[in-house]
Image (tube, rainbow, N blue to C red):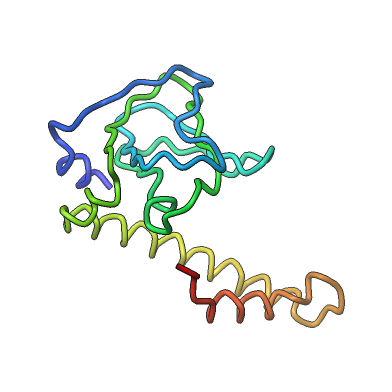
Length: 148
């Protein structure tokens, strides 16, 4: 992901104090952020999902690509600096190298989620309760075409 930092050289930067929200869940900012330094936490509802501190990490791409609200909040855990990209959808359309980086990032996340769900199916597929529904969830996700 460090390649994306090279591609973002010279772009606007913004800093956040610990506890500041970069993106509110349910909001629609149209912004993309690329982490330069610091640490952010992704929060869905009241549940922390993950902490990210890898320079070059991207936030806001899901909302931009699906033209919808942010599916989770992103908050600074410590003083954090990011490149900010305004008009994210237009920016991605005009910058294929960064768009390729975003596509690779999303593909890696999807690969990890599929492996996790397949492992759950292997562990719980024979159960008759909600854990046994993992195979149905996998089939639904695999064949779902997002509404536009």
